[in-house]
Length: 115
Image (cartoon, one colour):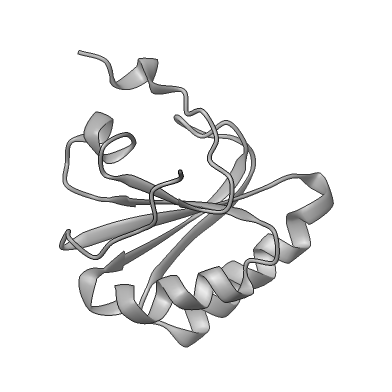
């Protein structure tokens, strides 16, 4: 079973995954999150970036916004998959043991984090 996000870290990233056919949906979702919540919305990447195997947009937030943002994302993602992970400074752990999903998980490209 896919691990669900839990509010146990001080800071988080949510990576909204999309493709060419869902670009505008993802752009609207991220923009709306930026308007409704105290979050930092990153660029909408129309290419794979870092360990992410899909096009993505990052939403950075803290534990104070977690309980409002995560249920909202779950309700409004409309089929988009979202990686949610703690932002602890340990990139490998953040993208593995500190990671959870809204929707279907994807295999991340973790080799870049291996020591």
